[in-house]
Amino acid sequence: MSGRVAGLILAGGEGRRMGGVDKPLLPLGGRPLLRHVLDRLAPQVGPLVLSANGDPARYAAHDLPVLADEVPGQGPLAGLLRGLDWAAGQGCDSLLSVPGDTPFIPADLLVALSPAPAVAISAGVRHHLVAHWPCDCRTALRRFLATDARRSVFVFARLLGLREVEFGEPDPFFNINTPEELAVAASRLASVPSPPTPAPG
Image (cartoon, rainbow, N blue to C red; front, side):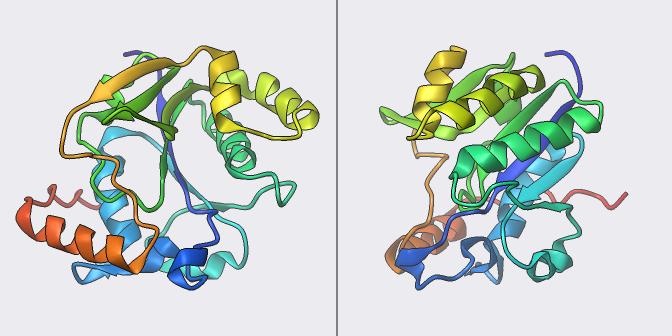
């Protein structure tokens, strides 16, 4: 693994099945879901940023830069593009992206997905947004967003030739879309050790 790597947490989903709330701010084990993602991702990367539309003040307690999509309504690839542009501006060579509702990402995610480009798979499911992207794919992504009406993450990843990396069970990319899944996550959290809290600084 070489070069400086930035981290991107994608929090742009509308959370319809959770009543339209910001899923990363839902309580899990007494803390916002976003804190669990941060605790696992932050030790693996350099600068870290959050992709979220709307009022960024609602994430102020987490002390992260917040990027809104340049063009709303283009889906997660628009957030990825903003993240890649930001990472390049931070002097990074690549970007590790994860959704904001995946509290169990592994501590060796970056190592496993290096070198970029690579995408995670578990239990036969391809997790399109758990991926390691080279910053120099920005031009291709900008062109793709301008020409592909579907704006499919899968299609863009295939065009880019992302290498697939298989992860074992239990699914480290379990994500929370419903109240029932939040309850499952709480039960699972109670049975697994938490990662150490990163030291301030």
